[in-house]
Length: 257
Ligand code: ADP
Ligand code: MG
View (cartoon, rainbow, N blue to C red):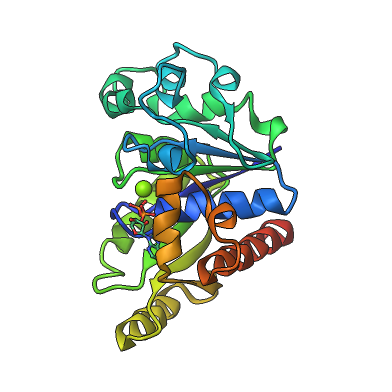
């Protein structure tokens, strides 16, 4: 059975997609069979893996509206052990279409049930909102990983996010856990990053991963080459950080923490 992890934060630009793609690729490098489910209509994880999101093929949209079976929509990426259930532009309309569906919060969970034994990890790249797509991801997940950008207002909105997690746990998915909080875009040259990191650690304590993802231009460049950082520049600080994060994730999942 795959461990299903939602990478979620309703703020945009905090490193959800960068973390999903690179953590997934690092887990794959460690021999885990990994699937990325791109449920953000922007499709940045899809294009960041070099897959054309405009192409005519089954995507997570067709899966959610019942026009395709999830195994038929999964594609291999150029990275060994890493598969993708791509997003498409049409996904933008899915949230509206799903409103009238039966058990609309469980559409994704049902769709993924046929995939769970083919993978060790399923990582879901959530959109920047707490709408029905994110709720579906949380309802289908074992745990949630929250990236937090080491910036001003980092903690703003986190109460809301944690509230949503609690509500999903209470009403939809009692198994949902917080896997951890990952600090992203840490800038060693500024006091602000250190201050934010301290504040986040006060708030989330041991839930914060020890590994801090540095601000690293190579991480921002890699998606335009359609490559995870391990393919693009395996030796840069960003690659090292995501490898270390994947070690921590493996340890937490195995330790059942
Ligand atoms: P989200 O998915 O939460 O919207 P992204 O992962 O797309 O966030 O990151 C937002 C922007 O910041 C992107 O342009 C991405 O390339 C860049 N970025 C993310 N993480 C880093 C990092 N550690 N260092 C430098 N740039 C980063
Ligand atoms: Mg994103």
